[in-house]
Image (cartoon, helix red, strand yellow):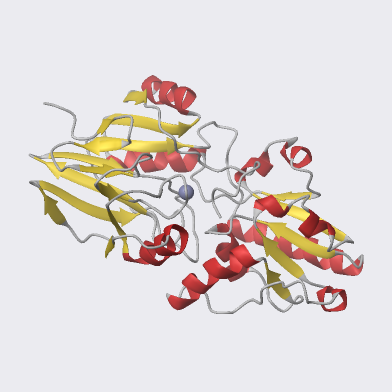
Length: 336
Ligand SMILES: [Zn+2]
């Protein structure tokens, strides 16, 4: 039988159902896994996504025709049964399950198996073929516990206060910033956010996913009120003229890449915290095992290496090229 989902120059295509999943070129019907910009692009005629992703897509893409559905709510499109399931990556992130004539495929988008106060926990979905990301698909990537990372952030902040430095924490404006803001102890000092984080925070607050309204750092704020402050800003803020005006300061980056020696230096930050919104090596392996799938398609990250590992342990695994980026902390504001 033909492939239920195939990889075309426009994106992941379901021919039978006449829709694409996270297409990178304009199409008629797009099912969107989540609001990061490498997965939700401009130019599609009809968007379908999780209800919690609809305000994010509207915020990022402007006036679009978008329909939101809940997790596990299914519908039929030309005889193909479609449903969304939690991916644990960011607010509203979803895996897409498609079923036709007893054949089940799941496209995971981006996912994480660890905890996150603002993302519903990853749900393993049984399928025959699982399309996985492999952003961190090497054994070196194993995440420390979220709690211990947040404690490290807090002690870094306290020590900056003692040294009269402002603390600037760089994290994706969509997802990671809200995760950190939900977990950090707000009694240590005042917390401000960059404008890009502030607008995404508002969407989370409207949905009841973030309690506090952290003030936006405007130009008019005098330096004295920033004493003892933690500022949460997108990765692009590191080394920017915007950030330099805040000196004396200590700059930190929250990313899975901070596990690698040298990635801090490359990004010109003083401190790295290992916090990712993607699955680590153990998370990927556990997630794939729980799907029960025999066929695994690796789409972004360490795809060739990870597919080789999966073949070694008995899966029918291979790589397909996509335009998904995974976790990037280099020169782009793609995720913001
Ligand atoms: Zn993502």
